[in-house]
Image (tube, rainbow, N blue to C red; front, side, top):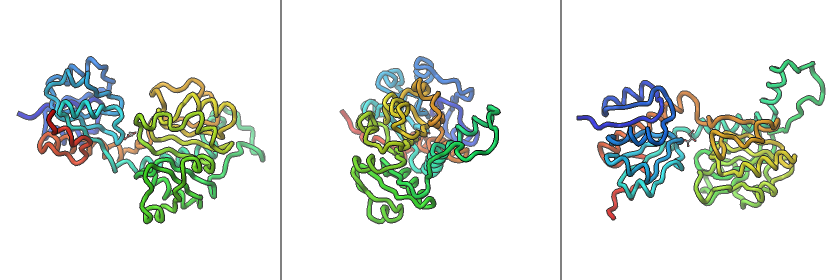
Length: 326
Ligand code: DGY
């Protein structure tokens, strides 16, 4: 008998077919978000689950899923999963690193350009029938070329954002917990600086850190006050890394020039002040969402699940300690 698995949201047909070759699959192809009770009921007899970043997996949920052996998140971020609780329950957890780096870096650039050059605001102006013709001071924006780009978090995605800056002949500064190897710095034409220097010198600051207790409000009121007047903040990493209330204040006061935001503290809710602000570009957590990349993410999660339930050692295992007794 094939093991039973659950896919919590709609996935692509080819991924579903691949899974069906290995498992008895229940997939939420209607794509209705599953509330806690429905999720627990559906997981009661399942050996594995493919989750998304909106499914919270914690000790409470695991207590109702005695058969569960693997949780395979269709995301590189895994702050929706309590790793320690999973390890304690001997449940493997995997994520999808690597496959979304380029798409996320591309989208970061979409936010940078759209925010600096007021693309969304001017598009809305035209659609509202307000354009009365060309004039010199219309929608004056901020030049990206030759500006200083600051990158906070210099993993795979941060590095790809840096490489793309070369075409704009920018000065690229970065800060991360660990300094990158000299050959990476050379390839990315990026200079390591302290967090304080990064904040003080960046014209555009873009964030590429995961969300964890240590990165909660990494950019808060104090950090925003250290940014250059008129600086632009970009966040395509995770909500909660930025204190959205402090950001809204800094934008409203004119202290910041603008913000491009793909992620929010209380998704899908937005800080109430943000939607009315013209100097803000808002997108619904879609930085990785090209058709090819979202398919690759789902397929990688599916391959992780097959490996988890057949070998007990999937390629992107986040908690090898799940095997430890005690
Ligand atoms: C991730 O993979 O963590 C992304 O945020 C999903 O879009």
